[in-house]
Image 1 (tube, rainbow, N blue to C red):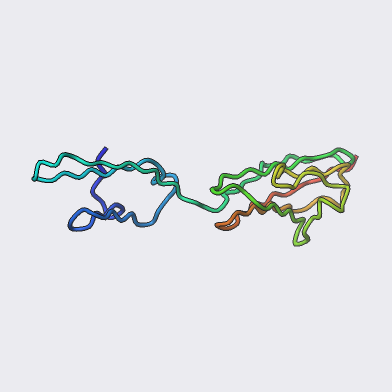
Image 2: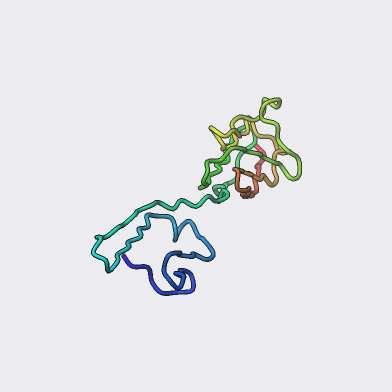
Length: 150
């Protein structure tokens, strides 16, 4: 496939260098090849390479329905990222949730980013934020938990 002529793909005047402006992993990730010929009869040359663009997590959480007091609730947090996610932080309001020391919560780790709240209380109602990070940056998503009394 020949690259379309646009301001996004700009070959140099002698076509030895291709400049891609405003890289976008959903558009520009893929295989590229370069072919060279000359008039001296030395044959053709071509090279192929793969372009993989690193990007920060694109994070989202599933919409929640109300939960009845006493039930457990899992807030699912998903992302796409390159390189892979290396950090997970959950907050309730502005307070960081420590999933290691607070036995009320489980999950919230790189292996299991979703957060489970055991035996939900009325005081658990509020905004929950999932923040996922990698070497490129962070992505966040927030959802509101509504708790109904028994």
